[in-house]
Amino acid sequence: MDIRSYADYVADTMPVRWIGSLPWRVHRRILTPIAPPHLVGPVDLAAIRKVMRADGTLLARWTDAWDTAECQWWHICCDDPQYDLDRIPKSRRRNSVRKALRLCEVRLLSPDEFMAKGYDVYRAAVAHYTGPAPVATRQQFEQGIAAAARYDAWQTWGAFVDGKLAAYVVCLVIGDAVLRSSSKSDPAMHRSRPNEATSFVLTRHYLRDEKVSYVSAGCRSISHDTNVQDFLLSMGYRRIYSPLRVVLGGMLSAVIKTGVGRWGRYVGLARLRPALMDKLAATDAAVRIAKACRSVSPARDEPSPAADSGGKPDAGEAER
Image (cartoon, rainbow, N blue to C red; front, side, top):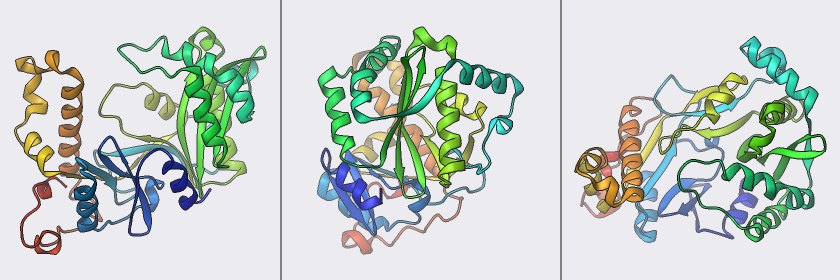
């Protein structure tokens, strides 16, 4: 699928805005590019602020360089064209993958098969989450699959143990990049290592057979702890550094500058408004990471205030 077709798909459920030659989405009042990150490059900040004002967006977040010097922001990817068992760094993990391949059958699932078998795995996985988590109904799950099936970029890999689906990974193929969209596994079948089997087979397939540039599992997580990225690093993925850029809308910028994302928990705000405090803490962390990334090329100088606001400084200007 090309980027324009993917933008059409995203536009079915949320606003899409074109900035330069690339599409961005507005989701939960956050503006982010939907193109694979290596394609984004330097962005016109005045154009970003114009879209933010028009949509009432609170925050814009993106990266404008790929595979740079080490910094505080990264994507977890595999880009080894010779990926195979011998590329997995530790012998213990290699042996575990060999066991997984003996016990599991990994293959692509058709949309109909995924509809029929995927929801039970989804529910089993969500049931073991700690803390509150939204749970889709079977109807919502199937509607999401049906919507994605209209576009040929969505591919779902499944691992079967004794004929029963034990794990799945949904991948999005855009141009020469593969983005891992979502994954779930049934904890009752973890002894058969279905996550290792699925990750290994799909990664090798895309890199060696399809010859894509990379398979990505997304960027660094700052809003919650996750073991997924450490697992993939042990599977031969690596951190591809890509400096984070952030622009805040005026109201959110004023709130973040108070430091409430850091000190609010100490005065009990987390107990009163836990979801809000989590979002403020994540935003505060993103702003601090973006500041630390400013020295990494190709950071651009801010345009003069007159370029986008008639001579009046933008309130979020300092947050990039």
